[in-house]
Image 1: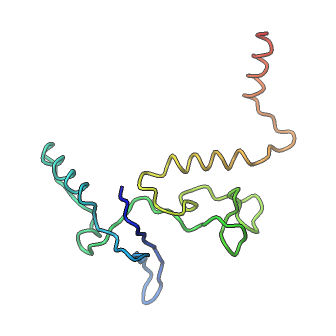
Image 2 (image 1 turned 90 degrees about the vertical axis):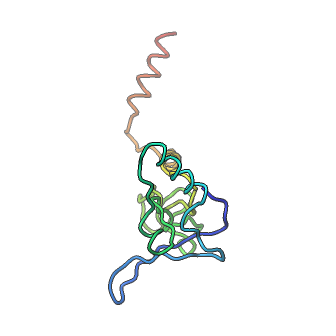
Image 3 (image 1 turned 180 degrees about the vertical axis):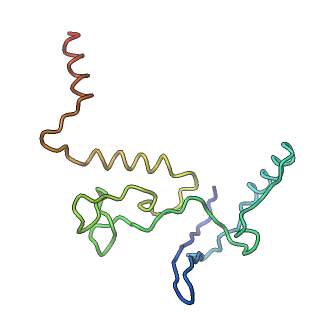
Length: 149
């Protein structure tokens, strides 16, 4: 995790061939690695008789990489400002929700899985229950409470 004010953007390009391009987006260059993490990796590898390794992009291109690619479907007040509204509904597509890493606007510095889970649970709490649908587990719990007295 780092506190530098920087970011990167991934763009697909088709000419002269299809490829993904990752570039810096901001005034400060993204470091290809975090120094304290690099030192820790080498110390740990030495301790366990392992081999410390970096990602190929870090070595060959002096460019950082991440396993947590996020963003791309920003939240906005209108379809001109974003892809989803504040309830994670896609503009102009009724009953379609986006609930993955693409709704997170920036790198969290940690694995985003718990954030995605929390956002998804919150979003689902906003979806009204359909008429005629019963929550069997809740009904059983309420019946047990009322019968216990």
